[in-house]
Amino acid sequence: METIIIIVFVLGYLGIAFEHSVKVDKLIPALVMMAVLWALIGIDHMTVYEVNAQARELEPTHIDEILLHHLGKTAEIIVFLLGAMTIVEIIDYFDGFSTIKAFIKTKKKRSLLWIFSILAFILSAIIDNLTATIVLITILQKLVKDKDLRLWFAGIIIIAANAGGAWSPIGDVTTTMLWIANKVTAPSLIEHVFVPSILCFVVPTFVASRMKIFAGNVEVDENEEGSGSKFASRMFYLGLAGIISVPVFKMVTHLPPYMGMMLALAVVATFAELYSNTKISISHVDGESEAAAHHSPVHNALSKIELPSILFFLGILLAVAALESLGMLFQFADVLNESMPMLGTESMGEHVSDLTVMLLGAGSAVIDNVPLVAASIGMFAAGPDDPVWHFIAFSAGTGGSMLIIGSAAGVVAMGMEKINFVWFLKKISWLALLGFLSGSIGFILIRNLILNA
Image 1 (tube, rainbow, N blue to C red):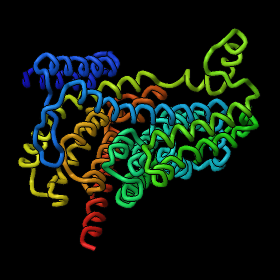
Image 2: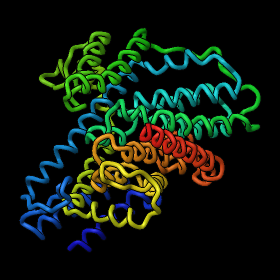
Image 3: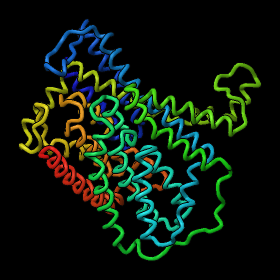
Image 4: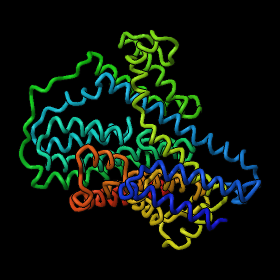
């Protein structure tokens, strides 16, 4: 039965990795894999064996109990993401992201490159790398008319956005997963990953800025119309403040992050309803409330949430949980570590090679980083804030930049600018690799300094 389970998991992974080739959305293989894996477990055993993370022993647990446990952990991530996505959509409802365009005054290509790169790095740490990429490429399309030049800008934005998402607990789905799973805390994650993430985007940006393509000026349309809402800037800053407050809420109350995100959403939604001058009506009671709800910014934001992404997270996280429940991930981790060169740190009684984690980052360029990080959470028994989790957060978050299909930011940029896979591989991948290696070396040096202090 274990062989069949592994085959189903591998086929599901391949379906996710090659979604662009088979023309099937990755949520479909994720959901099929989840359902089939748990069905096989249910058919084979009346009880399923759960791994004791401390003793690394298998303990019998009734299948519905462990499934409910993993569903609860998965729901924490999904509810958190729903809140963050809704806040971002509310900001967009008021055209709040047009506030960013007001800060861009220069016409120099080299200066614009650094501005967009820095904005991608900062914004992705707050509103996540996917949203930051969408916002900045939308602005880029209004500022830069040259298609070829825009592709180069988009490539650097992808690298910077993924680097920015790696050091923030709310900047990338994978770091959010590690944070909610109590593998990392926000202060320690920032301490260990912030500087490597800076290296990861500064080095490629500096190299690219010396290229001929970024010499000279661009033509900027000075008569571009501004936002149509007088509350654009106010909602932009309010939304960002709400999202930033979530880690603070967790540190003060010690409650799960999704509770803080729900509170932030409630505050932002309240102001949104007041500014829109409509009735607060999310549920439809009668004809009048239904008409009002269609003009409600909250209702509008909820209708635009990417449910396919939510279903993908549900499928992949519960699929990985099935393997974790059978102890397979711990077994695979032991085999992987034994076969790798003895490079890395010995901490919390758990040796994980640096090369292992870097290969995980490189793998995220081919296979979605969400299932990779979900698997790593079940593979390694290192304690909270162990350096291995910080390195995983960095590697999985930035390694995907090496291929256009390796990250959500890359995929959305590919769609918005029709970026060719081969073009990206030839022009941008080596820059992303340079940034990844620079950041990895920086991380190892900083980690060793902290451990030896």
